[in-house]
Image 1 (tube, helix red, strand yellow):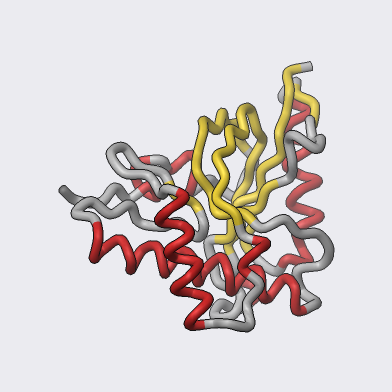
Image 2: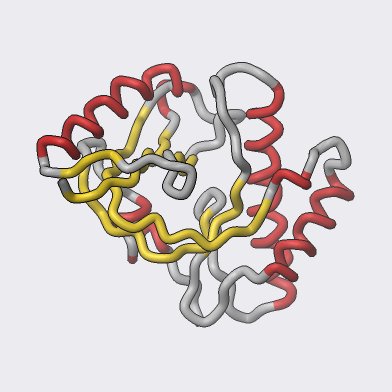
Length: 184
């Protein structure tokens, strides 16, 4: 059985346009690391990115030897019809990455099911420094479309990194930005 390419089958979720849109995000499984602050500075963000990419790669490569049906990663996001990433697969990937990169703090990474629900989203292309303007346009679009931003402890700002900032020039970085919303 051929792996599902979610960039093609779920374009609205994983290949949004650079103009804002409203979307209902059903339950997905993610590798998550909580963070805050400026992504351009500090070792914590760089270590988080290295951890996300390292775990994604370890899961992808580990499953090729274990499973006949492999769900390809989308920079930290995993979802499948017949196979989903289990806690056991995730823990195995953490052990493999710990051997390869013992300096990484893998205790911050977790496997999590989230159902973001109704969101406004946009594809931000460029430096993280320019995200505030993209977010402002996204939030303006939501309000003009009859929604209110609904960020809380339970529903948060999400960024899905499609580009590895260690390998891609800042002006070419692709990041999906999502904010939860509610109908006014």
